[in-house]
Every structure is written in structure tokens, then in C-alpha cells.
Image (cartoon, rainbow, N blue to C red; front, side):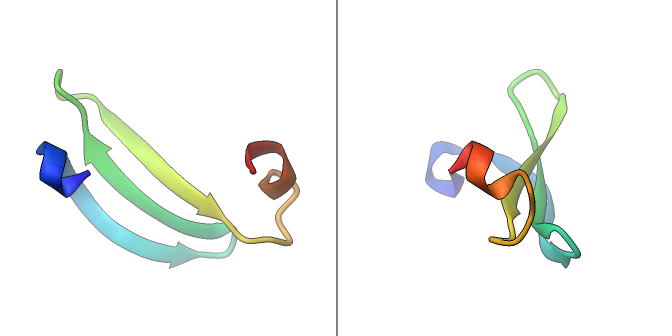
Length: 47
């Protein structure tokens, strides 16, 4: 993503549910990029 010029507002950080980073899109909107822990209920849904 960095090679494509994506600007990260917050570096990846450990949370109780997994790892999350915040990035800015082309229009200035912020989005969360989340990697859920394997034991989180949503892990199987996004796998």
C-alpha cells in the first residue's frame, strides 16, 4: 500500500480484537484496515 502512495494516519497498533491501522483515501476520508485475531467472531467471516 505504501508503494501505491497510501498515506497512513496511524501505524498498525495491537487492539484486543486484532491489529488496526488508519489510512487516508484519495478524497481525504479515513478508513480502518483491520486484521482480526483468530479467536474473534468476525475472523471466519472475512477470511
